[in-house]
Length: 480
Image (cartoon, rainbow, N blue to C red; front, side):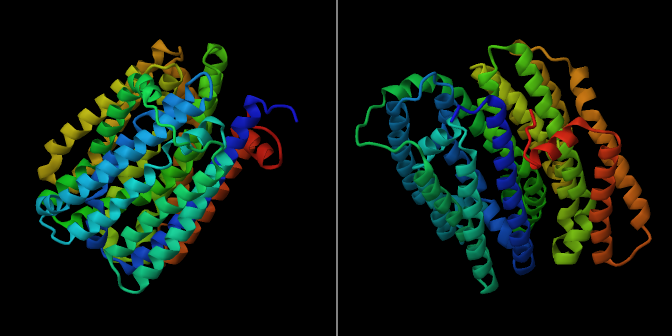
């Protein structure tokens, strides 16, 4: 069989990545709704306070090695073996350190019950230490289907365990074991499908060679984890676990939609852009095409979640209604995040880790500063600050990649603006149609159905290229 073309690989990558994330998000919504009905804001707050520690630990494990291995000109077993053993040693060391630091973490948050919870949750760090190289091999070979199976299976099995424990009154332990089993299943399936497997030959010289490239990515990812979780830390320290629960649920439900597209784009953006880096005209074409595809999906999805948020939460568990404004503001912010992933991958594909570093660092530094400034004003102002910083961040990224690829901001705006205008117009019309209704189930159902029908109808009538290509691919064609 002839080798697949870049277009075919990209199309399949988008398809499997989209299907994986679609299935995960559907399962995530179903599982999340059941858990939302059974658990309290405080349960979510307990787990949310520990997110920063697992996030930083996993960033240390990854250390930019996936990107570094992907950018290596030749696939060498010794490179992957070196990274594997390095991560195993680091993973064990980090778990031991965090195990004994658990009482200090509990003291910081004034929550003694965090000690056993942390020691269980931090086991995920050990599991993750075994799959960095395997995941990099799957990523480099564009084996999106295999990664998709791992993620879908992990979501299903861990969700079943989480629901079972929640129904039987285990509280926040249901969330802890759900999280742990998701990582465990994903680890085992990735190892099974990986085209590479480790040997007992330990040589850290390849790690040293890649560390110069990976160090900036590592530092960027650590800073990004701090920025992502700083609000939960501050709320846990200076407010209550209930406030952390509201905040974590607001970000969780908004991120469910964002992850659908982010996962698809992350799985193919860097390999595809790397293969076009020697042809700037083609790379600009691919870049703009990816942005249009993102706008076509992300705007109706993220603004749609914000549109139905109050009705959805009200139907499931009114105790969580205070998280709705947070959810809506994060949806606006997350609508643009997949685009920024494409921007960052342009820098990585050109081996410009410095640009990636400064892009992440500037954003994180500003966000952390803003977090402290708005802390006295409460969680809603903290969430609102995210929207403003993200819009500024987008412009910064566009400026940063100009040294890698010349693309005009006005062209990008022309690419994505039509989908934003159509999306907002559709929701405005649907809001006017449903505003007089009082039954939450009826309002929720009509908002979803009417929005989908109107959005698709407008794209069909306007003969949208992206829409027609997406339909053609679903029917067996290609999208690029």
